[in-house]
Amino acid sequence: MFIAIAKIAVLLFIVLTVNAYLTWFERKVVAHIQSRWGPYRVGPHGLLQPLADGVKFFFKEDPTPAGVDRFVYYLAPLLALGLALTSIAIIPFGPEPLRLFGHDIYLGIAPPNLNIGILALFAITALGVYGVALAGWASNSKYPLLGGLRSSAQMVSYELTLTMSVVGVLLMAGSFNLRDIINAQAPLAGDPDHGMIAWNIWPQFLGFFCFFTAAVAETNRVPFDLPEAEQELVAGFNTEYASFKFAMFFIAEYTSMITVSCLCTIMFFGGWLSPFPASWTLTHYLPSVILIPFGLWVILDGFRYETTLGRLVLPAVGTVITALGLAFIVFPQVNAFIQAPFWFISKVLLFLFVYVWMRGTLPRFRYDQLMAFGWKLLLPVSIINVAITSFVILAKMQWGAK
Image (cartoon, rainbow, N blue to C red; front, side):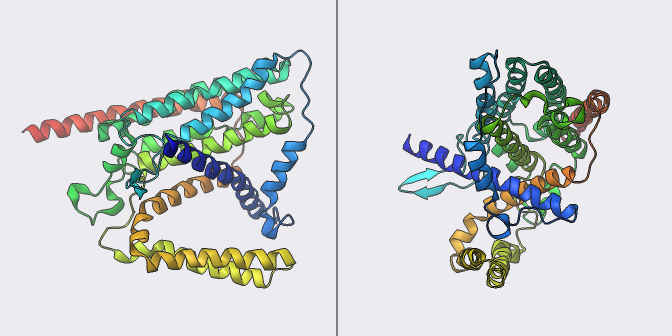
Protein backbone atom coordinates (compact mmCIF):
# COMPACT_ATOMS: atom_id res chain seq x y z
CA MET A 1 0.00 0.00 0.00
CA PHE A 2 2.78 2.45 0.88
CA ILE A 3 4.55 1.73 -2.43
CA ALA A 4 1.34 2.34 -4.38
CA ILE A 5 0.72 5.66 -2.59
CA ALA A 6 4.33 6.73 -3.17
CA LYS A 7 4.09 5.85 -6.88
CA ILE A 8 0.85 7.83 -7.21
CA ALA A 9 2.43 10.87 -5.51
CA VAL A 10 5.53 10.70 -7.73
CA LEU A 11 3.44 10.29 -10.89
CA LEU A 12 1.17 13.21 -9.95
CA PHE A 13 4.19 15.42 -9.30
CA ILE A 14 5.80 14.46 -12.62
CA VAL A 15 2.59 14.85 -14.66
CA LEU A 16 1.68 18.22 -13.15
CA THR A 17 5.25 19.48 -13.64
CA VAL A 18 5.28 18.27 -17.23
CA ASN A 19 1.90 19.96 -17.78
CA ALA A 20 3.29 23.24 -16.47
CA TYR A 21 6.32 23.15 -18.73
CA LEU A 22 4.30 21.86 -21.66
CA THR A 23 2.58 25.26 -21.68
CA TRP A 24 6.03 26.89 -21.74
CA PHE A 25 7.12 24.55 -24.55
CA GLU A 26 3.98 25.27 -26.58
CA ARG A 27 4.36 29.03 -26.26
CA LYS A 28 8.04 28.82 -27.21
CA VAL A 29 7.48 26.61 -30.27
CA VAL A 30 4.52 28.63 -31.56
CA ALA A 31 6.49 31.83 -30.95
CA HIS A 32 9.42 30.59 -33.04
CA ILE A 33 7.02 29.47 -35.79
CA GLN A 34 5.72 33.05 -35.84
CA SER A 35 9.22 34.61 -35.54
CA ARG A 36 8.73 35.74 -31.93
CA TRP A 37 10.64 35.10 -28.69
CA GLY A 38 7.82 33.77 -26.53
CA PRO A 39 8.28 33.69 -22.71
CA TYR A 40 11.66 35.21 -21.97
CA ARG A 41 11.66 37.58 -19.01
CA VAL A 42 10.36 35.49 -16.08
CA GLY A 43 13.45 33.48 -15.23
CA PRO A 44 16.18 32.47 -17.70
CA HIS A 45 14.58 31.81 -21.09
CA GLY A 46 11.19 32.24 -19.39
CA LEU A 47 11.52 28.97 -17.46
CA LEU A 48 9.70 30.41 -14.44
CA GLN A 49 6.70 31.48 -16.54
CA PRO A 50 4.66 28.36 -15.58
CA LEU A 51 5.24 29.21 -11.89
CA ALA A 52 4.06 32.78 -12.51
CA ASP A 53 0.96 31.49 -14.32
CA GLY A 54 0.19 29.13 -11.45
CA VAL A 55 0.46 31.90 -8.87
CA LYS A 56 -1.75 34.12 -11.01
CA PHE A 57 -4.45 31.43 -11.32
CA PHE A 58 -4.30 30.73 -7.59
CA PHE A 59 -4.78 34.36 -6.50
CA LYS A 60 -7.01 35.54 -9.33
CA GLU A 61 -10.55 36.63 -8.50
CA ASP A 62 -12.89 33.62 -8.57
CA PRO A 63 -16.49 34.80 -9.09
CA THR A 64 -19.39 32.35 -9.09
CA PRO A 65 -22.31 33.40 -11.32
CA ALA A 66 -25.71 33.80 -9.73
CA GLY A 67 -28.21 31.00 -10.19
CA VAL A 68 -25.71 28.23 -10.92
CA ASP A 69 -26.09 24.69 -9.61
CA ARG A 70 -23.17 25.00 -7.20
CA PHE A 71 -22.54 21.30 -6.66
CA VAL A 72 -22.41 20.50 -10.39
CA TYR A 73 -20.64 23.78 -11.15
CA TYR A 74 -17.75 22.84 -8.86
CA LEU A 75 -17.92 19.15 -9.77
CA ALA A 76 -17.34 19.66 -13.51
CA PRO A 77 -13.68 20.86 -13.41
CA LEU A 78 -12.89 18.31 -10.67
CA LEU A 79 -14.36 15.54 -12.81
CA ALA A 80 -12.48 16.64 -15.93
CA LEU A 81 -9.15 16.85 -14.10
CA GLY A 82 -9.65 13.70 -12.03
CA LEU A 83 -10.49 11.53 -15.04
CA ALA A 84 -7.60 12.94 -17.06
CA LEU A 85 -5.13 12.18 -14.27
CA THR A 86 -6.62 8.75 -13.61
CA SER A 87 -6.09 7.70 -17.23
CA ILE A 88 -2.32 8.17 -16.81
CA ALA A 89 -2.37 5.49 -14.08
CA ILE A 90 -3.08 2.77 -16.68
CA ILE A 91 0.01 3.59 -18.78
CA PRO A 92 3.12 1.38 -18.35
CA PHE A 93 6.37 3.30 -18.86
CA GLY A 94 8.85 0.42 -18.91
CA PRO A 95 9.06 -3.40 -18.98
CA GLU A 96 11.51 -4.07 -16.15
CA PRO A 97 10.76 -3.34 -12.48
CA LEU A 98 13.07 -1.33 -10.27
CA ARG A 99 14.34 -3.50 -7.41
CA LEU A 100 14.18 -1.34 -4.26
CA PHE A 101 14.12 -2.42 -0.59
CA GLY A 102 13.35 -5.99 -1.63
CA HIS A 103 10.33 -5.03 -3.73
CA ASP A 104 9.80 -5.00 -7.50
CA ILE A 105 8.53 -1.52 -8.38
CA TYR A 106 7.10 -1.40 -11.91
CA LEU A 107 7.17 1.86 -13.87
CA GLY A 108 3.46 2.49 -13.73
CA ILE A 109 0.55 2.54 -11.30
CA ALA A 110 -1.58 -0.25 -12.75
CA PRO A 111 -0.42 -3.85 -12.15
CA PRO A 112 1.53 -5.39 -15.06
CA ASN A 113 -1.03 -8.19 -15.47
CA LEU A 114 -3.98 -5.85 -16.10
CA ASN A 115 -5.54 -7.77 -18.98
CA ILE A 116 -8.19 -5.15 -19.75
CA GLY A 117 -5.78 -2.20 -19.84
CA ILE A 118 -6.95 -0.59 -23.07
CA LEU A 119 -10.63 -1.16 -22.18
CA ALA A 120 -10.14 0.45 -18.76
CA LEU A 121 -8.34 3.38 -20.35
CA PHE A 122 -11.07 3.98 -22.91
CA ALA A 123 -13.74 3.65 -20.22
CA ILE A 124 -12.06 6.37 -18.15
CA THR A 125 -11.44 8.74 -21.05
CA ALA A 126 -15.00 8.28 -22.36
CA LEU A 127 -16.33 9.69 -19.09
CA GLY A 128 -14.47 12.94 -19.77
CA VAL A 129 -17.42 14.19 -21.80
CA TYR A 130 -19.39 14.56 -18.56
CA GLY A 131 -17.03 17.29 -17.34
CA VAL A 132 -17.68 19.31 -20.50
CA ALA A 133 -21.44 18.73 -20.56
CA LEU A 134 -21.91 19.44 -16.85
CA ALA A 135 -19.80 22.62 -17.04
CA GLY A 136 -22.00 24.00 -19.81
CA TRP A 137 -25.26 23.01 -18.13
CA ALA A 138 -24.41 24.13 -14.59
CA SER A 139 -23.25 27.63 -15.59
CA ASN A 140 -26.82 28.94 -15.97
CA SER A 141 -26.00 30.74 -19.21
CA LYS A 142 -26.98 29.99 -22.79
CA TYR A 143 -23.46 30.54 -24.18
CA PRO A 144 -21.74 27.83 -22.08
CA LEU A 145 -24.77 25.57 -22.58
CA LEU A 146 -24.53 25.73 -26.37
CA GLY A 147 -20.75 25.45 -26.21
CA GLY A 148 -21.02 22.40 -23.96
CA LEU A 149 -23.51 20.76 -26.35
CA ARG A 150 -21.23 21.35 -29.32
CA SER A 151 -18.11 20.12 -27.53
CA SER A 152 -19.80 17.04 -26.05
CA ALA A 153 -21.29 16.12 -29.44
CA GLN A 154 -17.81 16.45 -30.94
CA MET A 155 -16.27 14.22 -28.27
CA VAL A 156 -18.97 11.54 -28.50
CA SER A 157 -18.77 11.48 -32.31
CA TYR A 158 -15.00 11.06 -32.47
CA GLU A 159 -15.05 8.51 -29.63
CA LEU A 160 -16.48 5.99 -32.12
CA THR A 161 -13.56 6.44 -34.50
CA LEU A 162 -11.08 6.46 -31.62
CA THR A 163 -12.14 3.03 -30.39
CA MET A 164 -12.72 1.50 -33.82
CA SER A 165 -9.28 2.54 -35.10
CA VAL A 166 -7.41 0.42 -32.52
CA VAL A 167 -9.36 -2.79 -33.19
CA GLY A 168 -6.85 -3.75 -35.88
CA VAL A 169 -4.00 -3.46 -33.36
CA LEU A 170 -5.92 -5.54 -30.83
CA LEU A 171 -6.57 -8.23 -33.44
CA MET A 172 -2.88 -8.38 -34.29
CA ALA A 173 -1.77 -8.50 -30.64
CA GLY A 174 -4.56 -10.82 -29.48
CA SER A 175 -4.72 -9.04 -26.12
CA PHE A 176 -6.09 -5.97 -24.34
CA ASN A 177 -3.02 -5.78 -22.09
CA LEU A 178 -0.89 -2.76 -23.01
CA ARG A 179 2.34 -4.63 -22.23
CA ASP A 180 1.31 -7.50 -24.50
CA ILE A 181 0.56 -5.03 -27.28
CA ILE A 182 4.09 -3.62 -26.98
CA ASN A 183 5.67 -7.08 -26.80
CA ALA A 184 3.78 -8.09 -29.95
CA GLN A 185 5.78 -5.40 -31.79
CA ALA A 186 9.12 -6.86 -30.69
CA PRO A 187 11.56 -8.04 -33.40
CA LEU A 188 10.12 -10.67 -35.70
CA ALA A 189 10.72 -14.31 -34.75
CA GLY A 190 13.09 -13.24 -32.00
CA ASP A 191 15.54 -11.77 -34.51
CA PRO A 192 17.07 -8.68 -32.82
CA ASP A 193 18.05 -7.10 -36.14
CA HIS A 194 14.58 -6.11 -37.30
CA GLY A 195 14.23 -2.96 -35.17
CA MET A 196 11.19 -0.89 -36.06
CA ILE A 197 10.08 -3.15 -38.92
CA ALA A 198 7.72 -5.05 -36.61
CA TRP A 199 5.96 -1.93 -35.31
CA ASN A 200 2.21 -1.64 -35.91
CA ILE A 201 2.55 1.66 -37.74
CA TRP A 202 3.38 -0.15 -40.99
CA PRO A 203 0.42 -2.56 -41.31
CA GLN A 204 -1.88 -0.22 -39.35
CA PHE A 205 -1.10 3.12 -40.96
CA LEU A 206 -4.79 3.77 -41.68
CA GLY A 207 -5.63 2.90 -38.09
CA PHE A 208 -2.97 5.29 -36.80
CA PHE A 209 -4.23 8.11 -39.03
CA CYS A 210 -7.79 7.65 -37.78
CA PHE A 211 -6.70 7.21 -34.16
CA PHE A 212 -4.46 10.26 -33.93
CA THR A 213 -6.91 12.51 -35.77
CA ALA A 214 -9.80 11.39 -33.56
CA ALA A 215 -7.63 11.80 -30.47
CA VAL A 216 -6.80 15.38 -31.42
CA ALA A 217 -10.53 16.05 -31.74
CA GLU A 218 -11.17 14.33 -28.39
CA THR A 219 -8.70 16.65 -26.67
CA ASN A 220 -10.22 19.76 -28.31
CA ARG A 221 -6.98 20.79 -29.97
CA VAL A 222 -6.32 22.57 -33.27
CA PRO A 223 -7.82 22.13 -35.83
CA PHE A 224 -10.72 20.82 -33.72
CA ASP A 225 -10.61 23.40 -30.91
CA LEU A 226 -14.23 24.48 -31.21
CA PRO A 227 -14.44 25.70 -27.58
CA GLU A 228 -12.06 28.50 -28.56
CA ALA A 229 -13.64 29.25 -31.94
CA GLU A 230 -14.96 32.66 -32.90
CA GLN A 231 -18.60 31.48 -33.07
CA GLU A 232 -18.43 30.74 -29.33
CA LEU A 233 -18.15 34.53 -28.74
CA VAL A 234 -16.20 33.95 -25.53
CA ALA A 235 -14.87 30.52 -24.53
CA GLY A 236 -17.52 27.84 -25.01
CA PHE A 237 -18.39 25.50 -22.14
CA ASN A 238 -15.86 27.11 -19.76
CA THR A 239 -17.08 30.68 -20.24
CA GLU A 240 -18.27 31.12 -16.66
CA TYR A 241 -15.14 29.59 -15.09
CA ALA A 242 -12.21 31.64 -13.85
CA SER A 243 -9.16 31.37 -11.63
CA PHE A 244 -8.16 27.88 -10.52
CA LYS A 245 -11.36 26.21 -11.81
CA PHE A 246 -10.45 27.34 -15.32
CA ALA A 247 -6.88 26.14 -14.73
CA MET A 248 -8.26 22.69 -13.89
CA PHE A 249 -9.86 22.44 -17.35
CA PHE A 250 -6.57 23.66 -18.77
CA ILE A 251 -4.54 21.01 -16.91
CA ALA A 252 -7.04 18.30 -17.93
CA GLU A 253 -6.56 19.20 -21.59
CA TYR A 254 -2.77 18.94 -21.40
CA THR A 255 -2.96 15.72 -19.39
CA SER A 256 -5.18 14.24 -22.09
CA MET A 257 -2.56 15.23 -24.66
CA ILE A 258 0.04 13.24 -22.70
CA THR A 259 -2.29 10.23 -22.50
CA VAL A 260 -2.94 10.31 -26.25
CA SER A 261 0.78 10.57 -26.96
CA CYS A 262 1.42 7.56 -24.70
CA LEU A 263 -1.30 5.56 -26.46
CA CYS A 264 0.07 6.40 -29.92
CA THR A 265 3.49 5.26 -28.74
CA ILE A 266 2.15 2.01 -27.27
CA MET A 267 -0.32 1.03 -29.97
CA PHE A 268 1.59 1.93 -33.12
CA PHE A 269 5.23 2.86 -32.42
CA GLY A 270 6.56 -0.01 -30.32
CA GLY A 271 6.19 1.56 -26.87
CA TRP A 272 9.54 1.36 -25.11
CA LEU A 273 11.16 -0.71 -27.89
CA SER A 274 14.17 0.83 -29.62
CA PRO A 275 13.76 1.68 -33.33
CA PHE A 276 17.28 0.36 -33.99
CA PRO A 277 18.42 -3.26 -34.19
CA ALA A 278 19.81 -4.64 -30.92
CA SER A 279 23.14 -5.36 -32.64
CA TRP A 280 23.72 -1.60 -33.02
CA THR A 281 25.29 -1.29 -29.58
CA LEU A 282 26.30 2.33 -30.10
CA THR A 283 22.63 3.34 -30.01
CA HIS A 284 22.52 2.20 -26.38
CA TYR A 285 24.51 5.33 -25.52
CA LEU A 286 22.12 7.75 -27.20
CA PRO A 287 20.86 9.12 -23.84
CA SER A 288 24.43 10.16 -22.99
CA VAL A 289 25.08 11.43 -26.53
CA ILE A 290 22.05 13.69 -26.19
CA LEU A 291 22.42 14.78 -22.56
CA ILE A 292 26.16 15.60 -22.47
CA PRO A 293 26.25 18.06 -25.43
CA PHE A 294 22.96 19.59 -24.31
CA GLY A 295 24.28 20.06 -20.77
CA LEU A 296 27.48 21.68 -22.06
CA TRP A 297 25.44 24.02 -24.26
CA VAL A 298 23.30 25.05 -21.25
CA ILE A 299 26.49 25.77 -19.25
CA LEU A 300 27.94 27.88 -22.07
CA ASP A 301 24.65 29.72 -22.55
CA GLY A 302 24.52 30.43 -18.81
CA PHE A 303 27.98 32.03 -18.78
CA ARG A 304 26.95 34.53 -21.45
CA TYR A 305 23.35 35.09 -20.28
CA GLU A 306 22.39 38.72 -19.74
CA THR A 307 20.88 38.43 -16.23
CA THR A 308 22.55 37.46 -12.97
CA LEU A 309 19.89 34.82 -12.23
CA GLY A 310 20.52 33.18 -15.60
CA ARG A 311 24.29 33.20 -15.06
CA LEU A 312 23.76 31.41 -11.74
CA VAL A 313 20.98 28.97 -12.57
CA LEU A 314 21.79 27.82 -16.10
CA PRO A 315 25.38 26.62 -15.41
CA ALA A 316 24.11 24.68 -12.38
CA VAL A 317 21.33 23.04 -14.42
CA GLY A 318 23.75 22.30 -17.26
CA THR A 319 26.19 20.68 -14.84
CA VAL A 320 23.47 18.37 -13.50
CA ILE A 321 22.44 17.37 -17.04
CA THR A 322 26.04 16.70 -18.08
CA ALA A 323 26.73 14.68 -14.92
CA LEU A 324 23.60 12.62 -15.58
CA GLY A 325 24.77 11.85 -19.11
CA LEU A 326 28.21 10.83 -17.82
CA ALA A 327 26.64 8.62 -15.14
CA PHE A 328 24.90 6.57 -17.82
CA ILE A 329 28.32 5.79 -19.32
CA VAL A 330 30.05 5.07 -16.01
CA PHE A 331 27.26 2.78 -14.73
CA PRO A 332 26.25 0.31 -17.50
CA GLN A 333 23.47 -1.22 -15.39
CA VAL A 334 21.79 2.17 -15.01
CA ASN A 335 22.20 2.80 -18.73
CA ALA A 336 20.57 -0.56 -19.53
CA PHE A 337 17.65 0.16 -17.20
CA ILE A 338 16.87 3.61 -18.64
CA GLN A 339 16.82 2.40 -22.27
CA ALA A 340 13.11 1.53 -22.23
CA PRO A 341 11.91 4.73 -20.44
CA PHE A 342 14.22 6.79 -22.68
CA TRP A 343 12.66 5.52 -25.91
CA PHE A 344 9.15 5.68 -24.50
CA ILE A 345 9.51 9.27 -23.32
CA SER A 346 11.27 10.30 -26.54
CA LYS A 347 8.35 9.07 -28.65
CA VAL A 348 5.82 10.75 -26.34
CA LEU A 349 7.70 14.06 -26.61
CA LEU A 350 7.68 13.72 -30.40
CA PHE A 351 3.88 13.43 -30.44
CA LEU A 352 3.55 16.37 -28.06
CA PHE A 353 5.69 18.40 -30.46
CA VAL A 354 3.33 17.42 -33.30
CA TYR A 355 0.40 18.66 -31.19
CA VAL A 356 2.10 22.03 -30.75
CA TRP A 357 3.26 22.13 -34.37
CA MET A 358 -0.33 21.70 -35.58
CA ARG A 359 -1.48 24.56 -33.36
CA GLY A 360 0.98 26.91 -35.03
CA THR A 361 0.23 25.64 -38.55
CA LEU A 362 -3.33 24.46 -39.22
CA PRO A 363 -6.50 26.55 -39.51
CA ARG A 364 -9.58 25.69 -37.48
CA PHE A 365 -12.48 23.65 -38.95
CA ARG A 366 -16.02 24.94 -39.07
CA TYR A 367 -18.36 22.86 -36.93
CA ASP A 368 -20.13 21.29 -39.92
CA GLN A 369 -16.76 20.41 -41.47
CA LEU A 370 -15.60 18.89 -38.17
CA MET A 371 -18.65 16.62 -37.84
CA ALA A 372 -18.66 15.63 -41.50
CA PHE A 373 -14.96 14.75 -41.35
CA GLY A 374 -15.55 12.45 -38.40
CA TRP A 375 -18.72 10.71 -39.57
CA LYS A 376 -18.17 10.61 -43.34
CA LEU A 377 -14.42 9.96 -43.57
CA LEU A 378 -12.72 8.80 -40.38
CA LEU A 379 -15.38 6.34 -39.17
CA PRO A 380 -15.79 4.56 -42.56
CA VAL A 381 -11.99 4.38 -43.02
CA SER A 382 -11.53 2.90 -39.53
CA ILE A 383 -14.20 0.27 -40.26
CA ILE A 384 -12.51 -0.58 -43.57
CA ASN A 385 -9.20 -0.92 -41.72
CA VAL A 386 -10.76 -3.42 -39.30
CA ALA A 387 -12.25 -5.42 -42.18
CA ILE A 388 -8.94 -5.56 -44.07
CA THR A 389 -6.99 -6.53 -40.92
CA SER A 390 -9.50 -9.28 -40.09
CA PHE A 391 -9.32 -10.65 -43.64
CA VAL A 392 -5.50 -10.70 -43.63
CA ILE A 393 -5.33 -12.43 -40.22
CA LEU A 394 -7.90 -15.02 -41.31
CA ALA A 395 -6.01 -15.62 -44.56
CA LYS A 396 -2.77 -16.13 -42.65
CA MET A 397 -4.45 -18.61 -40.30
CA GLN A 398 -5.87 -20.61 -43.18
CA TRP A 399 -2.56 -20.50 -45.04
CA GLY A 400 -0.73 -21.69 -41.91
CA ALA A 401 -3.20 -24.55 -41.47
CA LYS A 402 -2.33 -25.79 -44.93
